[in-house]
Image 1 (cartoon, rainbow, N blue to C red):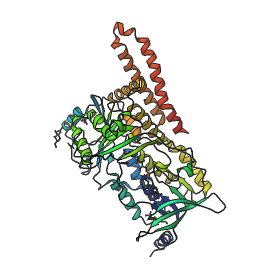
Image 2: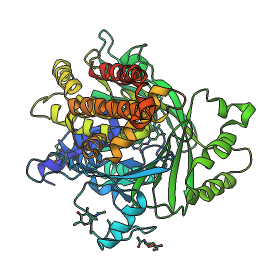
Image 3: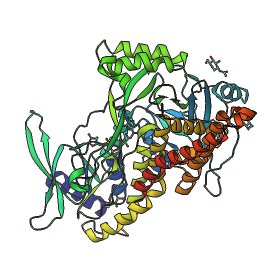
Image 4: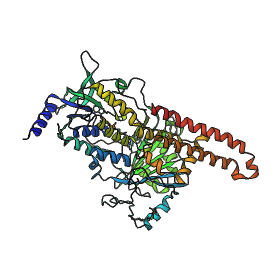
Length: 534
Ligand SMILES: Cc1cc2nc3c(=O)[nH]c(=O)nc-3n(C[C@H](O)[C@H](O)[C@H](O)COP(=O)(O)OP(=O)(O)OC[C@H]3O[C@@H](n4cnc5c(N)ncnc54)[C@H](O)[C@@H]3O)c2cc1C
Ligand SMILES: *[C@@H]1O[C@H](CO)[C@@H](O)[C@H](O)[C@H]1NC(C)=O
Ligand SMILES: *[C@@H]1O[C@H](CO)[C@@H](O)[C@H](O)[C@H]1NC(C)=O
Ligand SMILES: *[C@@H]1O[C@H](CO)[C@@H](O)[C@H](O)[C@H]1NC(C)=O
């Protein structure tokens, strides 16, 4: 045995026998696995604690944006999206009433690394598929492999869609195989304080033994990182009692089997027809995920109207493209008469600076959430891990028990992460407000403006921001307000009947509308931006 291997073995024994490590990570989910792996790669000894080690069956975290794929690769976990029957994602296909537009992720400039923004009208799906076929590129309909064969469709960026559980299993296996990580299946109950100091020394947990008995366990680390997800048990304690997620809607989920829908390799977003948006994306060779947003207190989904199931059957399905309707009905039928589809709350929780509590950090969804409409959660998490491991690197913070140094790093972390998180979070919230608009004249005007703006091809930068590739908050504000002006313009043309003499007499009305629409845009955008920038 070399000296290094010898000491590594001793450090591992300390983790296994005495439950002592440099870092205790609570939750082996998206954030927990990634942060454990990144810190272990820097030579830290890590205990990773997870309540349920079996493959999770969840409806979250199924589409990883290109910016998330890039961050995952930086952490050294890029292989975790291979071998799980993942489907490439080239961008979005937006369906708005009778219109639709295919929006590809942008390409990046090979020299500067910046997103290349080119304005060119975006095609509808039919023309897009035809053009692709003519260009002689892969016809990927219902077939995967366009990526697996290594022949990418274009030089534009790509994301990946998959079964969440399979991805999590891969991440956990990578952690279990790491010499500097010990993974323990245990349910964490509380933090452990020092006797005379507020310093957090580790956690207390309950482990289920093989005979079914539960035993109390203790784990100690110089630093405890809690990433226990959206329903965090520790949020109140670490962030304070006022940090409560805002929930305006829920996503109800169906798994569609062999649901053909062109173009292949795109996330489909259906807006404008039902009260909430509907998302469709293929997550495996045969499976397509459907997420149906149901706003809180939506009257059409009230028990009197047949509840959520009745709402999906009577209100949502008829608004969807004819090709996919049978798959929706089949998925509902397969569930049994009375069963309601699985659901998750769509939360918004602005970030909190963490410099108050020595010895503990709360990160991932526990600390910061946005509406999952744009599929940004994992991209935020992986980029956060890249930044955090940079700031806590042993060269900068040799001793993680040095809470002053850690607090300093966390201050930098709080501000630097905004370059991508504020964009992803604000876009998710603002687009949700626009896409869920129904009876609000100004919001509907903004919705029209947004679709028209996308269709006219101003999508490279917005998609670059949404996918975590472009990290410039001011660019976001510029695009958002341009959308507002497009909405105002379309509305003015409508109000004035396209400029006829009689129509022109209504110009003052259009002007009032303009002010109201702009005001509405500010109300949608600025408070969220303000909260995110604090
Ligand atoms: C409906 C919906 C769809 C979404 N779709 C996408 C998407 O397509 N793309 C995307 O990027 N993001 C998506 N997200 C967001 C994404 O799922 C989250 O941002 C991401 O999972 C957060 O990672 P996390 O590690 O913080 O939490 P999680 O991934 O939830 O992990 C938390 C882990 O902690 C464990 N745990 C909890 N409590 C304890 C305890 N007491 N002791 C031990 N272990 C514990 C849990 O078992 C779990 O393994 C979606 C969210 C929702 C609600
Ligand atoms: C594990 O930690 C040691 C230092 O304790 C380090 O030398 C080694 O490179 C780490 N292993 C891996 C796989 O990163
Ligand atoms: C692609 O292939 C499918 C069958 O594999 C076919 O139905 C479809 O028409 C093809 N599309 C184009 C544009 O060639
Ligand atoms: C087809 O190829 C041309 C030239 O390479 C390219 O400009 C165009 O964007 C391609 N069309 C599609 C739909 O990919």
